[in-house]
Image 1 (cartoon, rainbow, N blue to C red):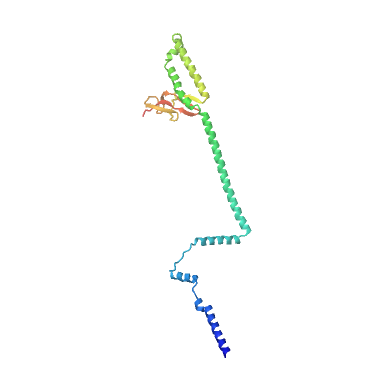
Image 2 (image 1 turned 90 degrees about the vertical axis):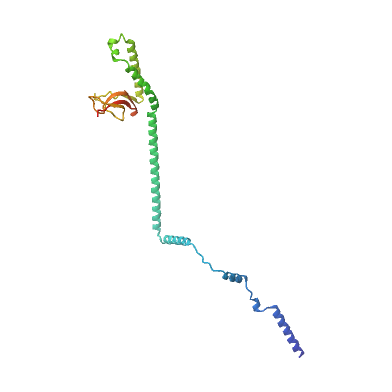
Length: 245
């Protein structure tokens, strides 16, 4: 009897100790931090999210290209590569031809500029010299023609010698200038004996007047002679033109 009583007390103590060491399962059911966070998030209002479709389109294009590349045969890929190379060759050839054409144009332009510089190098000097040549003409024209005849040789020997010296100097000067391309032309000296016609490319009309026996546009008076340098008009001849209308 006594042993049975002691055994019961020991069982009671053991059951009390086990309950104090291991709490009930309801106490272990505490809320975890993740569960608390999810409960808080559930309290907020749900906001819709929008995503760009560009990346999706790019992915679709890339996927399409990859599918096409995968379905292409080696012959088709080589054909496309050959077409691309041919197009590149055509472009390079066009650029090369354009470069060659530009270089040749530059050469021709440089050569032309050098020729013009060489041909018309004395143009400024010739323009400055024209006034001196005109003075020779004026000095020779003031001497009356009757004083240059053989009958007046004894009486006007000094004047004739001076006139002859001026004429020789003028001839030598004009011959020298002609070697360098400078030439003089006189509208009154017409080779066919006909009246010289006014030409705006060669002549400059200083006045117009009526004159019997001549047609409109005929040159009736030469005020100053014209000059050309290697075919280019350096100074137009100043003339008077007939206008009967």
